[in-house]
Length: 391
Image 1 (spheres, rainbow, N blue to C red):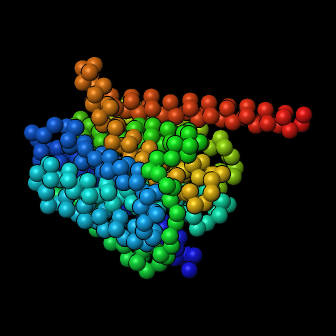
Image 2 (cartoon, helix red, strand yellow; image 1 turned 30 degrees about the horizontal axis):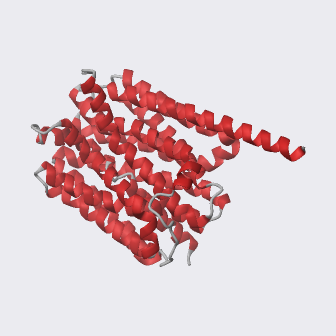
């Protein structure tokens, strides 16, 4: 087994995951114009409905692991991803378009746990933090390529933006060539309650981070173009600054962790929250680029830290199952985000187009609080155990 080629293959799957829904987000304003008579929630579900089916597939992923080897799972997942993504280019009915997004979601539900779980399975703990950082970096490299390309293609026709999913063929070929046909034992049930309780902090943190992040993903293109701040053909380039910030910080994650230690997670969360404050108040493309770079930087620090926390102290055989649960939390947050903000706005008759950014600020603040409480609880437990050992 060639370790270098194995790393590249696993990381290539990470490139695909961010493109699950976000790849066509720069085209959302154009899509809204095309489907002018369709409810806004259905338009936003083009980005978020994959998350619902990623979540559903992730729930049964541990059982799938017991039936198939990782190579076959990856090939099926990437195949569904590429087919479902590409078919969106040929749909002129909103419900058929949403159906193609269901296929996409099912594919990513198989890819996502492997893209991070296999790093924990094949490599030791000392290398995992660095590779988790690379995973998020590759994820965001895919975001830079996809959003920039999607925005350009959408300026020609919104249908063309879906051609970005052809990038899935690269990962498909690498998996055929280099991923072993290993069998990994999954958990015996779809939901392991004990595991959820043990990892509740990273699971809840991931959920709330995605609620916050997808307020930006599902609203930015519509908000920026409707306020005439950014031209539709420039939205993709501006949005790609989020991925630039995330990629740069993720690449430095391992080194930064060694220097800052556990406190690095608070830096990431603060950068993330500040980015939404800036999105709320800025009114220029340059200001938005700065805000989105900070958003990406916060994500680049926070996501690998959360994923690393989820796998720490666990048997490596459980790593893919744990990451499947993290996928559930991630994509449930994505799916709920526009529904939650839409419900609040409708219930309280809020018409402010930037209100979702306020929700993002509150969600991120909640993550900071539960993270601090978890650290306090862990510190207290360690002190108590130390006292007991000395008695």
